[in-house]
Image 1 (cartoon, rainbow, N blue to C red):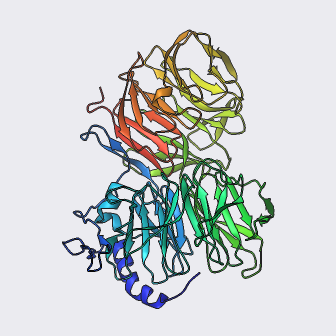
Image 2: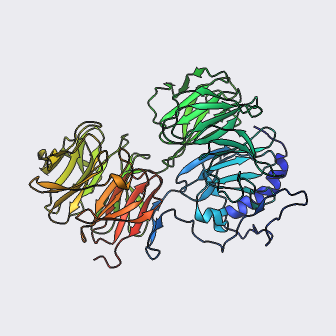
Amino acid sequence: MKRKNVVVWVVVSFAFILLSACGADVDVSMSSTETEAQEDGSRATSPEPISAPLTERPGHIRMSDPNTVADYALRSFLQGPAGVTWGPDGVLYVADATGHHIVRVSDNGSMTDLGLWQTVESLQQDGPNGVAFDSEGNLYILIHSRIVRVGHDGDVESVSGLEPVAGFDVHIGGIAVSPEDELYYTDMDYGKVYRWNPGGSPITVAAGVPQAENMVFGLDGTLYLTRQGEGEVLTVDIESGAVEVFAADVCGPDPCYLAVDHEGDIWVQGLNRLYQYSSEGVEKRFVVDGESYPGGPYNWQTSAGIAVDDEGGLWVASYTSRLVRLAPVTPGETDPDFTMQIIAPGFEASDLAVDSRGAVYATDSNGRQIVVIHPDGEAEVLLQHGSSGRMAVAVDENNAVYVGMPHGEIVRLEEDGSLTHYADLLTRRMVFGADGVLYAVVGEAFEPKSIVAITGIDTYSVLATNIDGISLGAGEAHISPALDQGLYVYTEWECHLFFVDFDGQGRLIANLQDLGAGGGASVMAASPISGDVFLVPHGPYALFRIDAEGHHEEIAARIFGDPWGMAVSRDGAFLYIAESGAVDRIRISGDGS
């Protein structure tokens, strides 16, 4: 970790950061005229557009109807991380892509917001997906096709001259600062690595690496690179442009992040994976709380960034809004064992239900608890169950809460906080129908699913294993009441939307594969008032409204954060979507009718 000119950065920049975090008035304005070409013809950085100050951090959902409101029933402070870096002031900085802000995390886990979203237009329009520092303490923030630099004097500038061709928006996958203090970035669309050239056009460092994304420099100056959707980590010779495979089959399909520790080892964080490699490419085993990895029990979840601190501790962010630190048992020791510290538990609800009073019940997988979000916005832990795994929740007409536990039991939560057995069934989706019966989708992961009607304690029957001759499949299935007539059913893998009545008879309404990719996280719920179905399919993460005949329209975009649960309020006024770090609230009816 470089410490050059740290004193200058701490003294000058800290005033800017802390004032911003506290909401004080901070002058981040630039010259009213953008920087023109210099006398030698080169391009310099230009002012970042400054907007009228906002008082609330922007949301990320974009409604098709500008008059429709999308906000939050619950929002964790750290929402959807997408890149972290260790700052020269000795604390962690997190790019919160869904949250639209840069978060500063101290050693004890306390978080502050740099407050740049209040005035910087780019952060009001889009969330950051990368952060890096140079040795002078300048902070570089990646915002998809733009890089913003926050100087140690507090000035905010857009880094100009990134485009290989003037006027072309480059799709930047990642940024990194070299030991020589030069800024590098990747072009995902054209598969190139560039070095920013303040004096002119960017310099191509390497080509032929499609979906080039996140980077880190090794202690010897080697550049390590990941590619989104590919499992491998590459090395790039920044002098010759030569590209070689460093490690294969380590990343998974989602973004993959890299860090280098003080011994020069390369840490790789992919989907549910964390690896340690020597600079020679030899995989190392590491121990956390007595468990050996890879292969230990902890689920690292969707990768969101890793960084190494001065003690050799590894900070690991998950896109579920969780942040943990692997603290070395013996700081300074080579390849130490670690103990895990939960810096920020985050929030991720795997299912939602709404009662007659408008309270929202959420199964928080990160906290291993059931949370109730009251209409006034207050959140309360209803049950601290301590069980790992995804859970289902449903509320009957009398507002009694039922929970599908991950060990395969459905229980009723009593008013005194105790749990009463209801049925021995494994379910991740259940709902009460208009007939007062509890319906559940049952079946192990990757096993054929069925819908079961539960009419009393340990009294249930199979409603359907197929509808209209079509199997429910082995993927996850979602169910929601279809007015007073039956249920809607959506199968994730096949993208089938069905109707089934209370006698098990039904029909295929539509196959909705054309709305997005199948086989991944999707959510579905229907209005008990209008009967409209609402769906967020895997892939584009857009929100669609679908009528009983299968006709659909897109009503919102940018539903990020892997949506896991969805529910509609009893009066049909609000749609709730559970995603990483938040429960979204969208008004879908102005008067509840």
